[in-house]
Length: 490
Length: 106
Image (cartoon, chains in turn blue, orange):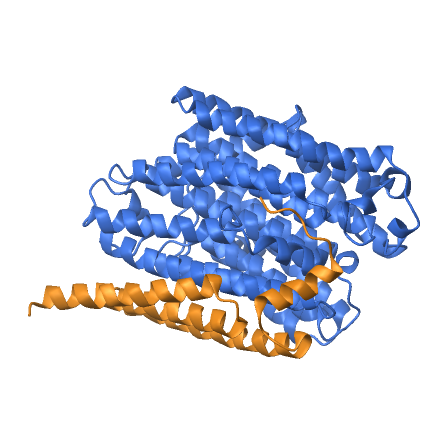
């Protein structure tokens, strides 16, 4: 009986990953106790992670092509969808596991809603990565976005959080209008409600299809926090607190980036739209690299530095997606994973440092919190693209693929990202190892069991950065995911 | 008047409504105007879809999302007024800036 149940679960695995997260969110929200709510949330996230990893193992490692059961919702698994579902479910499990150290409130009325919204955001982005038609994509993206707005607004003592939530809502409303119209135009242009039809040899009305695709790319870039549409990011990331900062800056940014890479992979197969989509993605990528790097250099707050640096890394992801080749998509997927690890390391390590969230609170961190210091160091090395980190491999692949098609400027942008990363990553390392802590920097540091609650997240973040030491498995998974996307028949 | 002309005119008007809404949602100084702008942008997008002959499910999804955005936005406007005594973005940013040092713009 158990074997039959497992087989049935595997048949519906794509839907179950999303359902585990959204169902867990509903259960977390109705429980009155914060601890019971946390237990339910972590169980739901772990269930989704198990299902996601099993799905990824079967599709990306064992190369099985399961026939998914027809669902009431247009959800199924393709190469990038499988990669995204496993990554986003695992990210939600990691950051919810550290919730007791990341959330500043002891208000039991609010905490369950924070867990529910965090799970809803992860479930929404998973659904977007697995969506098979335009309407489903739009709905899941908006579920994730609204959950993110709620997560930022829920910080009880933060007026800045309300300001951040309002900025996020307004920017997201603009993005939603672009996405809705873009999906409608693309639907009309390709003559089908299915996303896979974007990859058709001949489109019903190519101009409409291309305009719709461009609007969808801009909308998802806005939601990923890519420059020049990232005016909402800084306030949200810093004012909403560490928990919502990680929810927006890690889960949200990676979810939107993966949805964007999947859309780019489908567009790359459409002869009538691929050039235009590549040009748009490349322009957005270069803008994100330049603006994100400059903003990160000027940042004085840890969370803000992390989101700005994430914007620069996202630029490299967009450049990889713009290439539309197997190597380009592979580099994009590796860089999304590396970006998740680096952001998680710096943001969680910053929460472990305590203080007022400014860079000053990192002074002398290695003597006070060695694990947090090690995590931030791993994140800083990732920003630099240092050898033996996963980012180095992703960026190396991007440079190879760019030079292979004569895009020397894309290779230059990838190198510029690393050079800027040396500057702001170096600032982090210098404060951690070569400065002394003052009394002011020691305030608000997590102590006792709260400090230990961060340990799993910090260790996982360090492990992700160190995947560059033995990247074989992850490299093959990313390569297989991109190959599966590009072999799809329309 | 040909039906094609009417459809094109309806589409153009819907996109004009959407563009006005996007302008207000992105750049208005007042929080309530931003919420109204996003509602106008979503309404324009939904009208444009209807003019394009998109599926009912797609148009309905747009309307539902617009309503949810407006409800959340209205709640945020009320909380902003309670917390800051107003909804003007420059005043709110100035109040927040007193708590945290500003960073150079890119």
